[in-house]
Image 1 (spheres, rainbow, N blue to C red):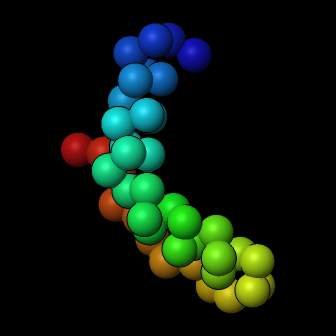
Image 2 (image 1 turned 45 degrees about the vertical axis):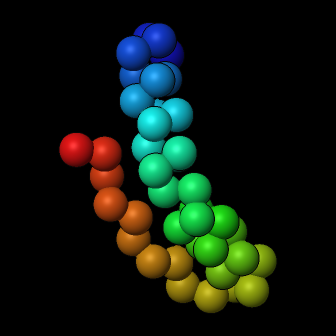
Length: 40
């Protein structure tokens, strides 16, 4: 993966860390996930 794309991915993860953790909890509980906004 190009370094620029990887940096964008890391930025997105940093911005949406709490939402990603919440979705992870929903996965464990086998519940539907909510959408997370893409990086703009």
